[in-house]
Each structure stands twice: as structure tokens, then as C-alpha cells.
Image (cartoon, rainbow, N blue to C red; front, side, top):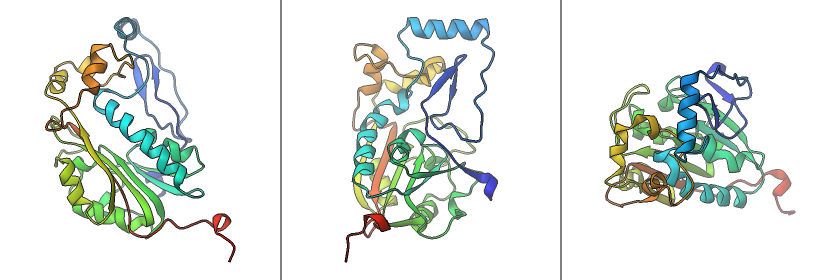
Length: 259
């Protein structure tokens, strides 16, 4: 069981030789620089000439992260003391505000760790976060129950997934979720934010895989930025849910008022 999850520090996304390194760089995995071939160097130079940055969220996550990160920062700030967060297959970018406040981050990798049978004690986390995982699980309702089991009273549930997305592996692709579907899935939580991003033109970018998963330019005049920020409610590609478990967040001993 110990080999299936690890504590990690959160760092920025890096580009080495045209390749992407996870937003969350594990403590126990040294960063290895790869040889930059002429072809990869040309690709990086081309993307730079077209205004694509070397780091940042891709098209599918750009607006989602822009909307969720301020909320995550606010929730981390209002949470007393430090806590413990469970990240299911990544989510390092979204959990960063909590890590910066001294939270313990436990990273698990699905499907090596079965979300339907999490190897953790009851009420052992203050935050359960998954980023684009729910569509791959076997039983999302069982997963919601397990997330509810390991979270403490008043803890946070943060989950992102997809709706209008091509079939993809990792290891299988089984479900799609509308924002309202996520509300039903986590109906026992107190809703904080539910939403989605997408538009009728964005799916065409799947025919251009060379730029689909590349960092999105921050310049609002860049056409790719316009595509990444234009959102039509009826065309969600990515969807997300943020909620709070019943009860109040337990104060750590040092934060408890004198009685």
C-alpha cells in the first residue's frame, strides 16, 4: 500500500525539450533533463514564434483553473490551521494554495489505488481532490461514498471531469458528467461551486493534437486564448464541483479558543 501513494511538494509546470512535467513534482522523483533533439527544438521555437508559452494550463483546463484557483485560495485562507489533502491522480495545481499554507499533501495514482476502496482511515482528510478522473472510474457513486468516508466533518470535496470529450483511456473511459450530474453525485455535500467550460468551436482543436495540450497563451488578443476563454453554457467540455461535507471544520489544538 505504501508504494501506491506519496507525499509531494507542489511546483510549477516545466517544459524540458518540448515535454511537460507534472504540476506536482514528487519529492522522491529527481527531475531528469532530456536531450533536446533538433526536431523538439524546432517545435519549441515554432510554438514560441506563434505566441505559445512554455508553461501553464492547456486549452481544456485554462478557464477551469482560472475560475477555481481564486476559490481554492479563498477556501485555504479561511480554513483554520493546517490540514491534510488527498489528491487522486494529480491536482497539484489546484491544491497549491493549501500546500503553501503548510497542508500535508498525499498523492495517489488511479488506478493503482482503487478509488472505490481507498486505503485510508475514516475521516483522515480535510480535502479530497480529483482532476479529470471521475470519467475513468467503474462506479462513480461508490467513489463519492468513499470520498465522503475519508473526509472529516466540514472538509472539502473538489472534483473536475468532462462532458463533451472524445473517448480516451487511462485506463478506460466510462462516464460523462453535466454540472447538474455532479450535483446529484455529491448531493449530500453543501454546494460551494458547480460549473463548466466549453464552446461549439473548441472540439475542432482535437484535430490539432500538436497544440491541444500545449500551454495556453495569456495574451487576450491571441486567438487560442480567445478560444480557451469563450464559454457557452450549453456546450461544457470540462465540468467541476466544489462542496463541503456536513459539519464544521475541526480546529487544531493551537487554534482552539480558551475555555
